[in-house]
Image (cartoon, rainbow, N blue to C red; front, side, top):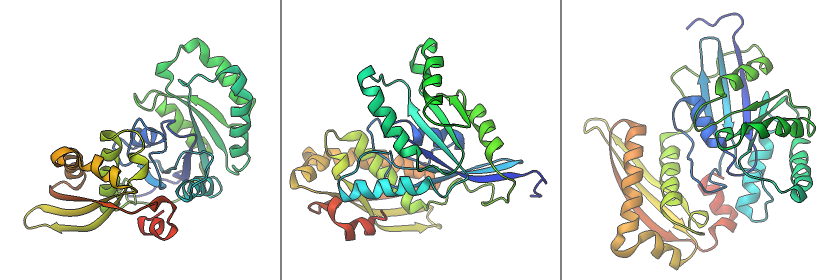
Length: 303
């Protein structure tokens, strides 16, 4: 495809606190799901790249782990990924969930925390006020004024990432900030993530959705093999769900193996949509004690 003279392109990081809706926004802007979404905070562990392609622009979006105070090795690595994104992009979207009430006595502490993160931003930044469908619109203006006083944002855009409202306005604001540039990816490439990586993320999402309490945070997924048979129109995947304790293994397997079967069935259906063919998914559960503090194992997982 010929590229128009005024073609714009650039890399944009989506950052903000856990569970603000960063992955939902990425998926909505792309028009398809590549980043896993759950109701639990800190679902995203890696930096996920999505590509929004148009005749006149291409925006490379980075969905990053939620900004938070990190103590454990896994959390510190998640924070490193998120903070690195602030310094190597053309623009930053700083996303907050406006449906979460902030008590007056906590506001100064919250603002100080946000300012600490924003100090590290070297690119033009847009504040995105997400989940506006869940609040009284009368509260929006004072909220915008409060955030405008916090940092010199290039724009403050209210959106509902889940419903898509405000997303066209958000794209317009980004295009004002992005430079003229080349098309980085072919138009039909929505992400640079491999199908193998996305399959692991889908399995991990189903663990998040179908187990409670500490289980999701104590689990990781390794793809042991990913084999495509074009003649049979089938992909065979062997994957291991890794947990930290024997009791967690028992919970994921469930009585008579039912919970593991539930996780596998839900994951298989979604992976089939991803790869466009039948999937044979075989899951195992393994205990690796304190894996989230094992830096060598974290590297094996790609963190």
